[in-house]
Length: 281
Image (tube, rainbow, N blue to C red; front, side, top):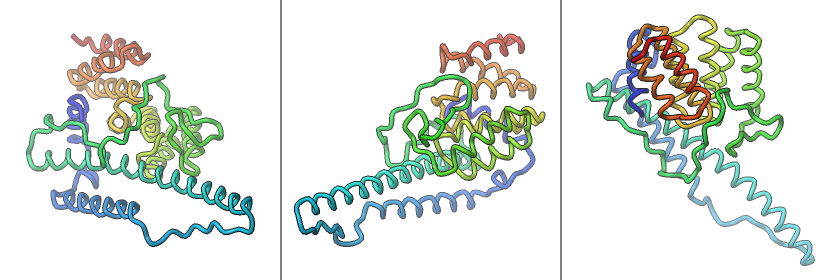
């Protein structure tokens, strides 16, 4: 993905207790790739018709037929938007999973992980504009629109779940916030608020004193959207956490990347302060 992230992954994964994902064998990972392939094939079926058109445009008068056609157009437009949202979510989630599997395959086979680049989006470039970087806080969904600032549609209940987790974090209920953000990531994988949820989970874990787990959460947030709204803050907090874990050299490199990648963002000032605290060269 990027050299800083790859270095951080290697640092964060190795010392942790064996988790279910880290215990996977090469055969397990290849099996996951096969499952993903099957899911992609099922998705392709959406492009195939199931029979003849079933649109009925009958009516006694021209106005009646026009009304029927307008209603049918609205129904089809709504269905198209629903399917487009579903396809985009599957592509995003599938791309993230394949990127993770590629990394673990190379690691298990003894390859050079530094040669890994960006995972190509499934299906090629979708033409979706890359969101610009903004503030340092997690993205705030509008009060009732169900759409985040990049035009992405939120799933039912996604906005409320995210706000509830944020409220717990703001109130200092770190364990509750960590649990809610973790559940959010499981319920809405690859969603428009996924990176913000990982960032919030990291802050909650940091509040609980679980620095290593917090660093992994910040890494997940940055990896999910390396150019997204919360990416500068996620990268800064990742570097700061590495410093707290006595990985000073890696922390200094990571913190320097904040200024290189996100010049002008408030996180750059925070990163420079952290570099001075660590006496980075």
